[in-house]
Structures are given as structure tokens and as C-alpha cells.
Length: 114
Image (cartoon, rainbow, N blue to C red; front, side, top):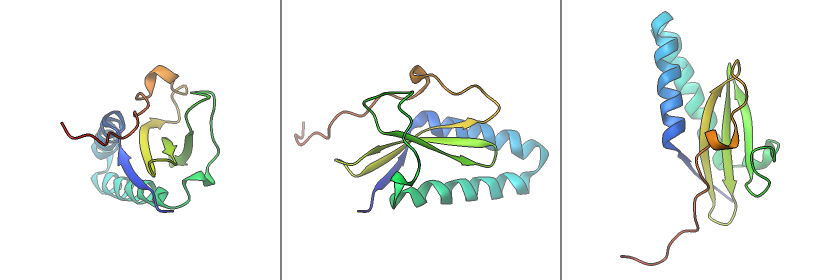
């Protein structure tokens, strides 16, 4: 099964902030960091379950993470919708995020058009 990968607004903000921080010291390194991060994120379209599930954030949501350099990419897998959603890109020096630091769970897809 191939999953669709989407990036939540909070994760986009995390990436933007990290990129700007790295760019201050080394613009070239920032570009390489971003390219590598996006490549790693979009590789989740196949086999997102290869990373361990972390029930500490929610026993009902399939939340997982992987390490990318000094950051952890926290993501949710929804098998029924075929979606992997990047929730946060969190610096490893920070305490793990609490469940309230993560975006809420997406509701079921709506079939109705309004």
C-alpha cells in the first residue's frame, strides 16, 4: 500500500524555524538539511510502520517517530485513509512534546459535498 504524506501546519512551522536557525550559521547546510528532511519524510509513503509506535501520546492514535539529525519527526499513520501526517519536527534537545503539543486527530473523510 502506498500512503499519502501530508505535513501539518505545526510541523511546517517547526521546519521553517529550524531552517532559519541553521541558515544563520550555514546557508548551504540549511538547504542540505531541508532537502534531506523532505526526502526522509516523503519516503514514509511506503512502510511507515517500520518505526515503533509510541502510545505515550495517545493510546488510540498510531503515532510514531524517527530521528533526522538533531530532530525527531513525529507522525501519525492512518491505515484506513492511507494517510501519513507529519505532526511535529521537534529538536532532540527539547523535552518530548506533550500530547497537547500535537495537532488533533483528523476526523474521518467526508463523502458529502457542501
